[in-house]
Image (tube, rainbow, N blue to C red):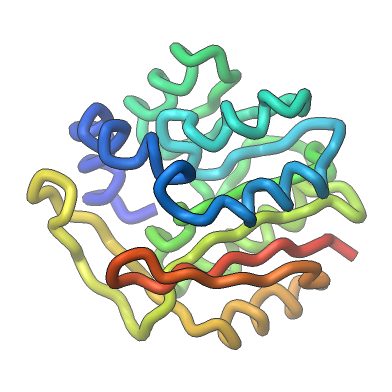
Length: 197
């Protein structure tokens, strides 16, 4: 992950949690509801879990969740919330092949440099069991930028078009089983559920 972004999340865990904890109450939650319906048992890896907001939602359906984040402060906060948590880079997931029944990565991979996106998807594919479900949330757009929207601290945002993400998922033998988009405020969110085939 982008080093400055990780450092920002380490410094701003409290501000980030306050800013995002009510996300699914304020915006359409169909994607996470459909994800929970798709993964009814087993273990889910929450990649870029932050302080555990989505991990808790998924865990409350009876599915075991392991949180993973590159920022130490986020891992500590998710652990405090009762979620098993690991600090690691998205490019080298510290798990054996086919360890998880699902992987959830909601607006976390948008912090991955474009040149590393394929490697990140390859790692996600590797740790998923056959027929495992991958939930991906990204923001639509072109190019990338450093944004200073979290207390004025820098974060890398990399944007994609819908068809670019479809192509990425298809190239790793993911079958897209659901797609939706919504636009709360200025950003258009692109949400995918894909099954490993």
